[in-house]
Length: 282
Image (cartoon, rainbow, N blue to C red):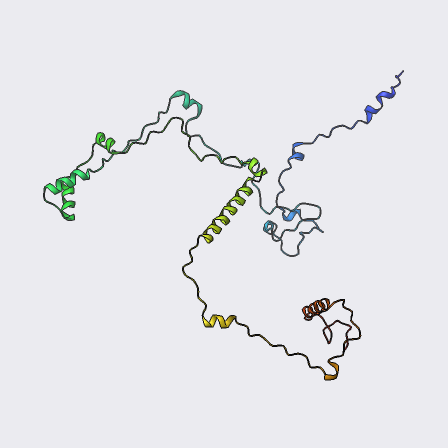
């Protein structure tokens, strides 16, 4: 009699199994170019007339099929083809390395050419009485004096001795004075410099020597002179000269003159025919 399955084991039957993919699915082989045998009726690359395989290797002619990637127009080599460069060993490999040891042969060096001793050659040319450039050239061709290695070491300048704790390179930039920036130190220094400059200018103007006294000429005096203008009294009718005004709104005569003076000062900015306001009529 079969045993009844427990309800706890039921969900295990519906557990999703992992999908196993092959290598060809993970890394599919490259798509080869189309051929005449691959063309079916209704395909995008179907053509009329003479059709050749070389026509499907032209990227300007081949069209992409619906729902498929574009076919490559170049043919790939076979499975036995290895991509990249093949390095062939030239040293014999491990057996050659164990069997013998290749010793690097030192290349022959060219002999060191000694420098000419021009001081000795010039001294010998002067003693021989040769002073022209042609004679000195011929003398150096016949008497080629060279400096030996021992003498050459003394002629060459030795490098200056440097202290052992000396460091090379560019020195580091000094740190930014944050306290001076926060305290406005540079502003205070600038204000002090401006005050000192102004004080120096004032002292220079004070101690400036006057070369001579300027005298007024007749032309300068006439230029500054303003001839007085005599104001004629207003004309009044004789029988109205002794008539006093019937209404006087000023307490005193000084207040009246002050009001007239203020009216004359504002005469230029007032509007109207009589320059007394906007609503004034003659």
